[in-house]
Image (tube, rainbow, N blue to C red):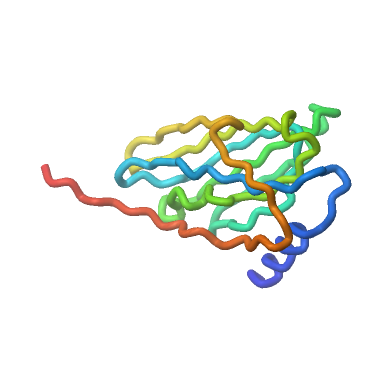
Length: 159
């Protein structure tokens, strides 16, 4: 089943979309989590682009992608949400390194708002990012979408 999913993802990554003038990898390289924090969900709204590939989908997460929000036509808006079902499924900051591929008509018109919810097991913290906080890198067919390290760590602090 996983092999079929990867084949579909790769097909979508290299499929030619008439909407987009350019394909870009989106990364959040400076996402810093505090000791024992891990990602439990995120919400992303975007405008002026379309998600064409999600190279990393953690096990036991639920993803919901709306690439064309009918209520917002004709602004090419959409959203992506994802969450865990149990705490053991939370992941580290590596999830957001080259975490999706977008087709963008006009890079200047591309907008993005990302809310990342992290927890240390007791407290949930929300991190808000906008288009200026993420890295958009041009994508070519020579690029490889590599699964990032999703691990996280927790160092016990003596009291």
